[in-house]
Image (cartoon, rainbow, N blue to C red; front, side, top):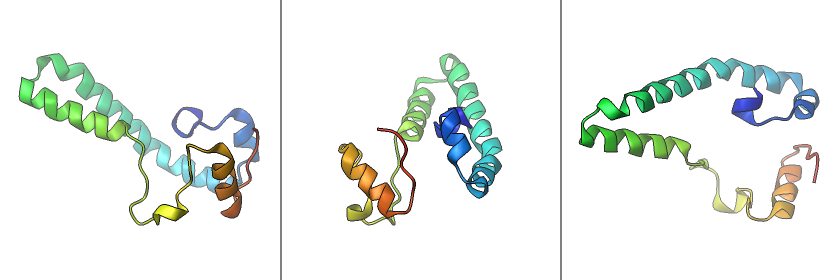
Length: 99
């Protein structure tokens, strides 16, 4: 869970049990996707150039951070400003721990 969700060990202890359960249920899917991407990366030297470009495009897209399309722009956390991000998360009822 630390690898996929970037939760520190202390964060795991402070995360509500119901949320940990939801995150835990999604781990097999995340592991399968990671394994699939690793297999594609291993096969890259054997692919034709056009297929290499297509797979690289897919991997780059998967690596980019995503924002929910249905989330209004003004409700998205301001990741460039830590103080604004902290305020946003606290407004959502999420406990913010650390600096």
